[in-house]
Length: 158
Length: 113
Image (cartoon, chains in turn purple, cyan):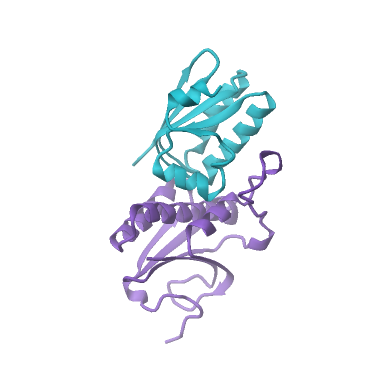
């Protein structure tokens, strides 16, 4: 058994996993999937809404940017519940990498004239979750994983 | 599956854009199309009625910003009426509650013009 680096989940067998084609037609399937698990895990409706927002932004970015102009891409969403503690959501894609630090930072206090709308999605995701972590070119270590992939991890505490 | 319904009511000066359902990347083109159509006709005093809008991702927020910039350039405005709890939360998360005037109900929003 090879050990998996840096994944916050310690019980892969109980994770809920959904793989969908990377298209906007499947966006709501992924957000509903995660929202239902979050509700059952005991998150209040306003927190479920924030989780849904973060999942939406994460997937939309993968579909529109990581796989931009590339057909046949897939997104695998894995949801891990640590009962009474936290929800860990990971997204795996094999699209283009990017430098999150290069994405323009949204400033919520800026006036209209100076407001740039770039980076709004990532900003929303970071505001909505307790932890957001990007990893690129991760080497797959299991038979069901691609040889290399990108992984985005979102964490929300109960 | 929850969809988006848009209903426009045109008063003498103000247009009320009633949004029902949810706006995300998958259907934002409908929202953008409706707003662009109004602004291309020179209609720049817009009330976004959010009483039945349960959800908006950054895709919709970007359309709101573009609409606000276009409206202010023409001495108009884009205001929010009766936002749901979810919408208040989303607007606050990105700081838009200070950017967009918001009113408890549509009448007050219309009267603001």
